[in-house]
Image (cartoon, rainbow, N blue to C red):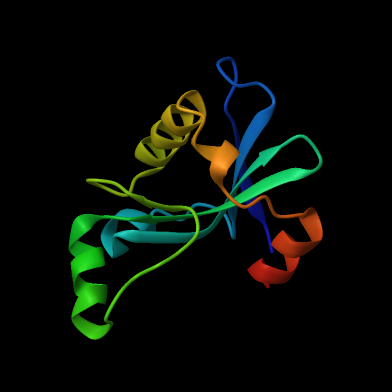
Length: 111
């Protein structure tokens, strides 16, 4: 399956944001985007899930809780907002406390 890769340069040239399956524009209307990961070099990968508050509330109507490693809640799930949030999280050193996935683990999860 195709992926869209967004480089985070010039601020963070060693990082890329990968949207598995590409970007289709439906992210905003669904209020949710999974199958995204942040890649640093060849060995450091973090899974990301983006929700807007409305979608999160809808999921909580059907579930007792929502828990995902790498969950990011945005006011609006757009590509620009996802990229800006990730850049801010890098700046805040957020990922140093998050689980790192190998390339093999990422590939297995995304299938």
